[in-house]
Length: 346
Image 1 (cartoon, rainbow, N blue to C red):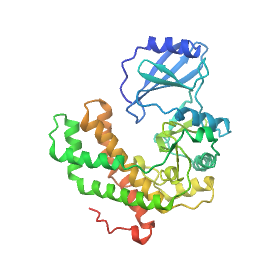
Image 2: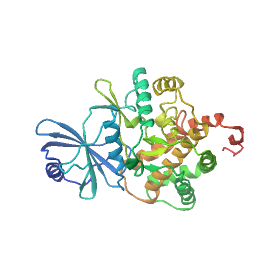
Image 3: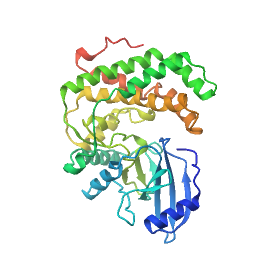
Image 4: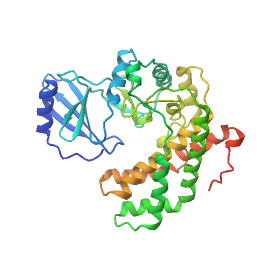
C-alpha cells in the first residue's frame, strides 16, 4: 500500500504498549509493497529497538505467521519470525486491522538491487530448506492445500465482459478497460492455457511441499551486509514445488529472466526434476490471478489512490519484453507435444 491509512500514530503507540509492552518513540509509514490490503510501518522504541509493523485489513490466515515461526525455529536463518505479544500470540487485533510485529531488517528488496552470485546460490539453498521441511500434522492440517481452483480464470472472463460493454468515468479504469479490450484475445488465450494445464497437472497428482507462493523479487530482502531474507508469508501453501520455482526465470518486474541466474539458483537448490507442466501452469495462472486481482480493484471499485495507477502501469508491463507473458510463452516449448499450441495464440 502506497497511501497512509486513516489511523492515528497515537493509537498505534498505545497498541504497542498494551500488546507488546513496548514504548514507541517514532512511527513512520512506509509507502511500499504491492499488497493493497496491507500497510507497513517502521517503529523505533524507547530502548532504540527497531521493528517492522504490518497491518492487514483482508481476511487473515494464521499460517502466515505460524509457518515462518516454524521455519525459523527449524533453523532456516533466512526467515524473519514474528514477535509474540505479551499473551504469547503472534498477531493482535488493532481496530479493523490484524497487526503483526517483526524485528526490522534494514535493506533493499531484490527489485531495488541486483542479487550477487552468492545471493542467488543462498536463495536456492534457502528455498530447498523450505521445500524439504517436514511439516508437523497440526500445522499441515491448517496450511492451505493446492486445489487448482478456477476462480481467477472465471473472474478474468467476467472482467473481459465488463471491459467490453461498460463505460468507466474514472480515467484509470477507462484505460484499464481499453487495454483489456485491445488484448482480449491474448488474455483469453492465457486463461484457456491455464485451464488446459490445470487439468493435466491434476491428473498427474504431483507431490506437494511447503511453498511460500509469492516469492518474487519484492519478497526477498537484502540487508546492509548482504544477508538474504524471505519475507511476506501471507499465503503459504502445500503445492508442487514449481509453485515457487516458477518465479526464478519468470520475469516478474522484467527481471529474473536470465539463464545464468537460474544456473546459480539451482547450484544452491540442488539437483531436482522440474515438471514442465507444473512450471508452465503456475506461470500462466499467476498472470491470470494478477489480472483478476488488480482488474477488480481498478474496474469494480474507486479505491486505491496511487495503487490504481501502479496497477495500470503493471498491466502494461506484463506484456513487455522479458516480462511475465513472454516468459510464460517460453515454457510452452518444454511441454509435451499434446500440450503445445494448437490453442491459437493471438
